[in-house]
Length: 248
Length: 248
Image (cartoon, rainbow over the protein chains, first blue to last red):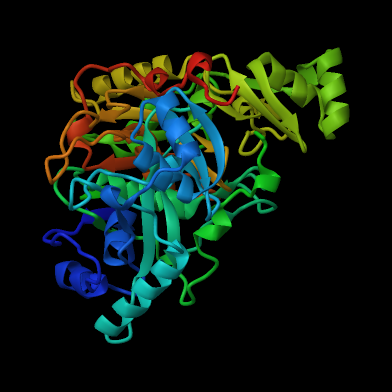
């Protein structure tokens, strides 16, 4: 049995806020087998990863792309600052490979739910480090016991409509479960079975959340078998590198 | 609160079996707000969508591809028969666009968990029609009440490791929830929010399932707000058409 329950009563998060304390107050104490799934926006805000448009000076590339795609050149400049490689710029969509290796629209830069209407929220600088820090802080609040922590974002998909939440930062949950080489119920090798557990947990959590009701954190239970005492390889293990990219 | 519970006690499914009857016996009666998530393999097997390798005569294209990628030419022939467009054939992986428009490895043709070791399981001919038929049959078993039905498969992703389950056939669940144009918690338009509810439900269900324990069916509860009396547009609404594909 897997369950996902949104935490109620989290206040608006501001730079410098003690996010672990707010999460603990809203839903703690958490168990050692729990997975606490947190939308990256509140993590980014607590870390001060917010840019005011008024402070941005767009360069010529941003100006050109903004003209081509009918966008605010300051917004495009912030996206380019977060981008390692512009994968596609087509039909008003900028698909970027971020510094972390994630391929997503606008390099994860987002205006929605920013506290101030003229500001943009970036992805955390190092989401795996953010997840580890959040887990460590929750352990202090939990008297030595901490849940696994997932930091998530909503990503589009290459060949399917709509977005699904994925893990961009992980501490204490196996990102992948590898059944390749193991046997199925009739003793045959399961060759193509390499399960993105953390991404599926991110998607499960998103179903429990109302987008208009400030529910950035969701408690997922029943994944104890995938929770680890050590923080593990993080969401970096989920990134298909440029080298492995079949679509370059 | 969202929950996902694997159904216990489903027997091995054979061509011609009454899958609705087996599902009803294992976990029914189901409620009108329930979502019953079924791995496509048992649907395909019940529908007889199984090919024996001994009956396959590979053509020259299959022979050539099999040589290039170190595969069984009969297996490749079955994949090509299910393929509308070969998107990529690289490093031993055939990525195909199926007749249904799905982009996935080997056109969804799979050997694992097939009852006989020399046979392959195909995707259902029309998975949305299969979902509707299954829902209608469950309604008969449920004295007029039926759950929504999702038929799922595990798909790889373009830029991320591992597989996540997605919906390939749907009856009675909104495939997508559209928040575009609606407002977030500070009254700002949620521009990029178009949620693949059905795919996220498929992923949530997969977390509840043990791959080696014959648990093809999972009951997901708590999605009542997305369940509809009519069968709706099906998983066809999740397919990004070739026309919309940013990566051609």
